[in-house]
Image 1 (tube, rainbow, N blue to C red):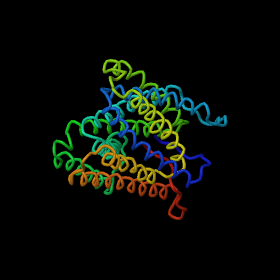
Image 2 (image 1 turned 120 degrees about the vertical axis):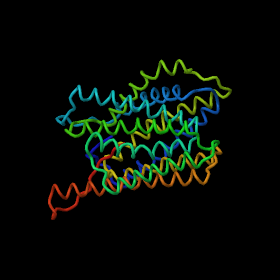
Image 3 (image 1 turned 90 degrees about the vertical axis):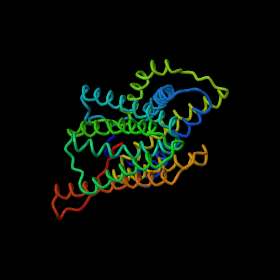
Image 4 (image 1 turned 135 degrees about the horizontal axis):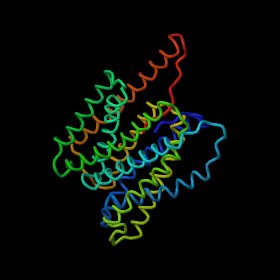
Length: 331
């Protein structure tokens, strides 16, 4: 989600916030894997509890946040409704399909495919719907990401990489991309959108929409480890949801977009490390190669975005103007 900087945070503290947020997000899939192993809870029920728990905690964060000064630009009600509903639906698809992918094909592959395919779908969608140019660097990054996906699907054995799980991860990435494209489209005319508030109410939309589906799947799992399952559910709602989003929005308001994109690569990296060390997943040569290609593609897209932003600023201000880092982020 896009956000501009009016924050008093230092750059160093903002970078620390983003690093913690990226690592925290990487633990969500590991916690989900442990929940799936402990009982029969499904991905829709888990996604519901994450939305419901995250909503409660983020409402608390909003209540404790210092009030914003009056007189700033406010977003029209209809536009805000479109933003919240669109973000809520995209967020529901994003995390539900991600948890299903983790359950189907494992944590490492699900996380890498989701976060590798997301920026590619955003770049392609922005070209088709917003008229944004990819450029040579962007096109090379998209090609590299597609190659990484192909290596993962075709090069891994059935026990390590399941095509259905990869498709679910791509669906998750599509939900992620839809949120970002909607935010960019709404941001073209400016506006006073509050990213943390939007995310909070998007979780409310997700919880309401998921409730009947989660109830049909089974809201309360049958498990021989109820205390462990409850603690893991609380962890998912608190750390990779409420805490990570709050830190992310605080840090992303100060750090430039391309830097944020690269820092967020900590999420798939930390997830892959936990998949091997904590969950005992096996990374084949094809899995490692596909992962490297996808992460390199995301880095390439971030660098291409940085160059585009600098060129746009120079054209707007003239060749002799001092280059000012463009702040903001798309998630």
